[in-house]
Image (tube, rainbow, N blue to C red; front, side, top):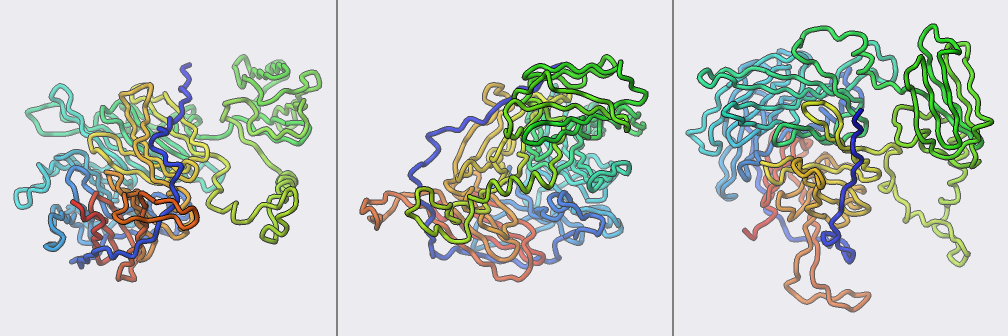
Length: 584
């Protein structure tokens, strides 16, 4: 069995600035233009049965404004009349009204369980579109941006089951056969799953192709499904269509549907789909207990358990169940196993290093689940009590002063389980590369070059680092291309932030709150006047500016996009344009 390569992200030291001092608030006014929309944005509110955090991530925080990365300063949204409206900016002082480029053939409001309509700009001449009811459209647009000569023509439309949103798509031309690969996201209910909310996340990779050149008919040639328990932060198909990259909090696994799209999956397949733990384990300061549910009619003769000082091997009915290096050493002679009345196997391991907390049972094995009891949690909390104090550094002269409350902040806390970046092979459907992101919190993604995969931005210590995936480079698949100094720390203090973005040329990053306020963080720029640091008296050569724009509206922000020169902000009834860079 092939094992995925464990990789790491290589930071380019020259792109880091250890001398960065912070952002200086600039009160320079930002030119802001406001356009009133003819019809409101087609916002879809979450229903009562869409109550999970995953529904909120996927649909509740959906960005209703779409940027056409093939054409600079061109944005789109879908209104309540089912029209796709476009605004392309040439000159800020001569802004026209958004113009209709396409109208959805169906009445959206007739569908009870619809999602927000979604659109993705596949190439400079192709667009993929979902109306939110479960129907997929593939549209030939011709060269967009030509105004009157632009004509959007439906080349494929088909009902694909439950409603979905489109998260990525690419166009492939191979031996004159044109195909389009699309990634669809659904959150579906698993009726048999009694654990947690019972919802799971489904990513469907659909490929449609025009096999007959003379006939313009496009048809589905491949459908593959991945399942997981969390909405991916980032998911994109590689430009050559040979792989897929996903950043997610919980792992995804492929379920190949194959040619029989309507066929029922057998029991073995549905067992594989469920991301249930293979075993459960818990620990005290002295020992560990592993619980395994045995197959029916298991006897003592069917079980083989081998203990070594730092290794364990469990075989059930001649099948390897669990084998590998233990996190730390155990007293293998005192370790035991027993079959319990509820047909489960219970293994007791005695720790050699008493008091050591094990983060995992077998090194690198993610198939088990650690169960913590309340007394353990209380003991851990007690051990950490010395890190906090009711007073702010009450006696600084003590040998070990208590930790200042200002040193540990909420924005320094991350999930106990970290996210991972996985690359899946399109033909074998297996994971080929895995990067454990640890505390490198995912922030946002941005298209820097539309011919490449979208970049993703991660927090590294206090900075925010931008990574460009290169599927063709096996040794260096993710390139560090830009750094936003201290932005990882700064954004964490923004409690009401909704959308995060940056300019494709990295000149600034921006985030908006749910209502009204937009924050802009510019890269350090040389000073036109002489400036000195008050404390140290040295001359400051460059300064990074923070700017704040406050929009004249009480409507919530529904969409947010950044281009090199402008920020576009969409509310229910208005589209705002903020001129950020005026040098060009």
